[in-house]
Length: 307
Image (cartoon, rainbow, N blue to C red):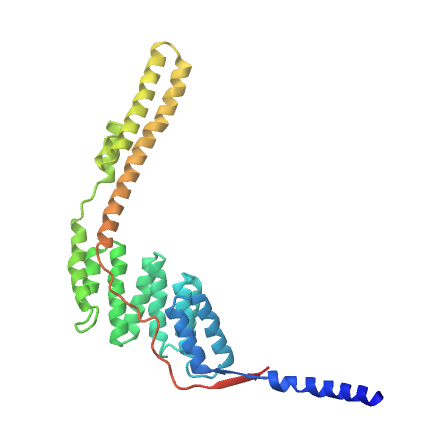
């Protein structure tokens, strides 16, 4: 009986001692495959997941020659997810750490692009000009020059925009588009515009007339009727010796009357902005930033883990 028990115990030990060797397997992470996977995720629009994979690549392969590319792509992922502050931090680090590095110029261009996307044209222009002053690469220069034209369009600097587009070099994929935009830019000076001062004066003479000046006829009717009723009620109150009521109504009418003038001036500015915005929307932006660079590099290193 004792022999059977010993045999059972020994058999059990031998059985389970063999499990680790059966279950053990090796997980291999190759640097080129890791980076390729991040590229695939970016191409699919899964930028948050790509960020994780790129950070993992840098962690496991800090000496790999593709690390600068991975750092740049992290900035691109932040840009694509509209995390512009984080994108600028990444691109600024790339530029400051090696201004002559392979991704420095593109990083500087992308800093300008983050400001452009955020609607800060003055800052965007500064960085596009920096690209032009520092780098001779045709792709970078033409992209910066083209985007500089758009930045000036946003600021309604029609002649300056036209001149910027003219600087795009012949032979660039952007050349034909830039020539068309150069001609279209100067037409911005011919856009119909309304004078806010005229609108204010018209509203002061006849409430609602300033709104009618910019074709806001419904608002014009409301302003005319509202002010007309308050003026009539004020006059009637004084005629009937209701001086206190007349004073209150008169005070309120002053508010409505000045508000009518302010509103007329404001809607005129809005009308002008809409005309310029609609004009710009009719122009096509052909800049295709090479965000997802095709660089893949060598076979790379390899890490293996045993579980």
